[in-house]
Length: 194
Image (cartoon, rainbow, N blue to C red; front, side, top):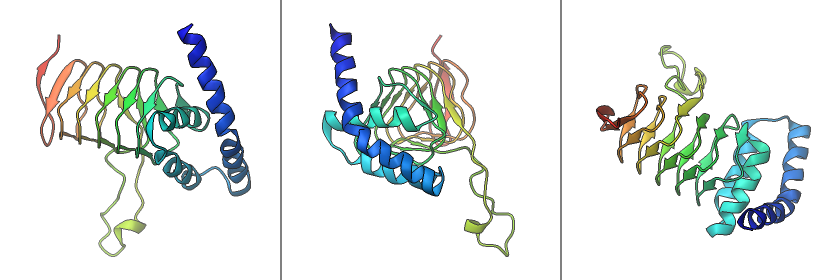
């Protein structure tokens, strides 16, 4: 019965989202599929409050992201900057997060204000005669392994293994192995969960 109710709610929100989804795809056809269009819609959806906003966001992202399971929670004021994002089932993303290109595997928890950046090489800065904003950079997908918990206010620029815990306010600049508990700036592994 519970599954039937969830499927009905999904269908209702697909119908509610249909006009905006159609508009999104028409704009993409006319102007090309780019992150500017994606970001504009992501900003709009981020501002929808409450549980209704959570349902609307999940049902929008499942059609426009690389992959987004319908059973996720993307909380109020969370922004996605890259369409090349994959979110597995059972994921909870807290309010006011900023998420770049990444893979968030199933059953992960991200606290409030977590920033997941698209790798470490986003900005080149070697040429002193060219402004940094004009030097480009490289975006890569960061992976957060299944059943990991990222504490409030953490900044993630490297991969995190499965079943990890990242302490609140940590800055992850190097890959964290599976089953690790890491804290600090830069984050260091303090023990294993096994």
